[in-house]
Image 1 (cartoon, rainbow, N blue to C red):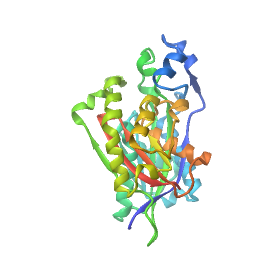
Image 2: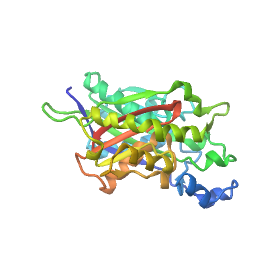
Image 3: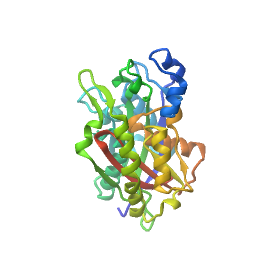
Length: 315
């Protein structure tokens, strides 16, 4: 294959809404404290009977339906997640079983908040190499499972959800819809964002992450645009990892995407880790905020202090 494209996207969130006022009843916080520091007003929380693969399966089914495909059309399933409880079967195999995909390659990708853009690049490379025909790429996390609900510095941030994309090859002579990835990490700062321990709990060094994201990432994101042959001003939308509104807004400005719609789904969804980019992207598509063929920068960053970004064309 000369290239690939995103054929369709889909997303899913649990029904339960947790507001800042609700959190004020659990820990010493307030709506003003939360919104002024991270910009979040609400988030969705999955119940004990809603595992990660169920969230992922709903999002993937919507993406398949939007693409006009059946489960039998998929031969690769990639799930980006860092909140899988079990080691085996992996999340991708469980999603494939839920959807009835007959015999796919099924792999999980754990790059935390940058997981979806890593998985999308992997699907692009795999289809272009001829090792798969069509891929389901899913970002899904149940952050509520790894949250200390007595810690006001972290419990105000998180939400649960999933987003998915169908990736397929483009026809001969057609312009690719997924640009080259730019990815990397800062391993020596990997402990700045953690999900570790028994039981596993989410923790981070917020100020370190903020400084790194707002100072080190803008030139990296601009290089992702360069690899796609575009200037940041050419972008129709920017979908950054939805970590914190105080990171998203300055980062988008420093990238130079002056004409772009900037995804701000963090306000209503919180930080959903690997789900945040496909969730926010799918919502922009559903709302008609971007048109088919529009160039969109997807840029994930965070856990492991990893990053990955690419310019894609809106399905």
